[in-house]
Image (cartoon, rainbow, N blue to C red):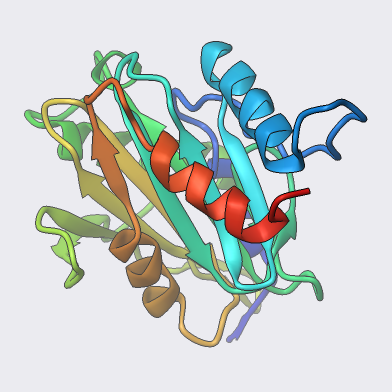
Length: 228
């Protein structure tokens, strides 16, 4: 059997499917009297007020900030070199690897089968893959995933056979933020998909503090743009 590239298409399908604010790339600063980092902070505040992510795509990784405490603030980093590939989705420059992060709130998972948020997220992921493949999946389960954050689970399913092709599901990680929600992380096509997922989890932070992660973002922008 040979594995086909369809797993990347499936990965993209699920990257931003649940209750996720739209990601916004950094725009060039306008010509004003304010310093460049101040202009970017102004832009980030506009995104936050609109309920959108503010994203910095750098050679070392993708840095994402959601600084709106409704319902909670978060920040994370996807390590590595990536380019935007749609809402909350990124691909390697050669197009072979994929990474995506989305957040699911309790209301997004309401009515799905499962006694907990994680179990309902499992149902959501399974349904999305089954709809894409147009067939039922076998061997679906959640297994504990070792990472820097407790309450992390890996969704797995048996490969799907199509003729002489075998379609394997990409790495799909569910991080439990109960009672606030869950994080869905998808990684495929890298030399170490689980390792990339662990890197994302290592940099994941959430808070309900009204200050959010503005100080962190300000320090980053000052370091990047300096006093110009």
